[in-house]
Image 1 (cartoon, helix red, strand yellow):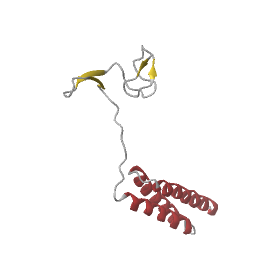
Image 2 (cartoon, rainbow, N blue to C red):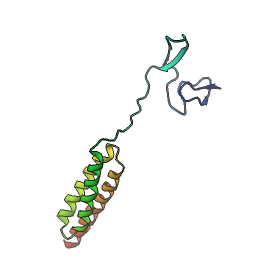
Image 3 (spheres, helix red, strand yellow):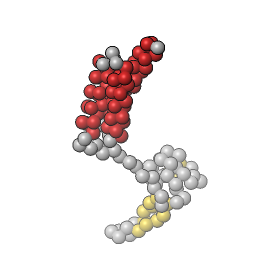
Image 4 (cartoon, rainbow, N blue to C red):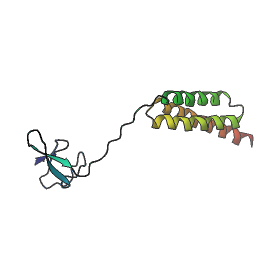
Length: 126
């Protein structure tokens, strides 16, 4: 057994990929640091970890999605308005959620409920 150079978990000596962090153990290259000439192994092709950065406008867009969704629920007398506001809530909620704002997911759910209610009302009037 050997230790993975990336996540420090115990893996098989013959392993070419770490089963825990999925890094390629064969494609790592040795580099020498200038401070103490210690040899470090770094991945040749490492996975890029993307972290979402909250933007200044994301909370505003998430609030817009929630408000549009709630108004769509209240205005269920007109299924067309419910569908449009539900669609607005889904789109703006998705934009906010992709920008890292968790409240955007609430707008998405409310928007979906708007559209389902509006479709039920449309189908019941046919």
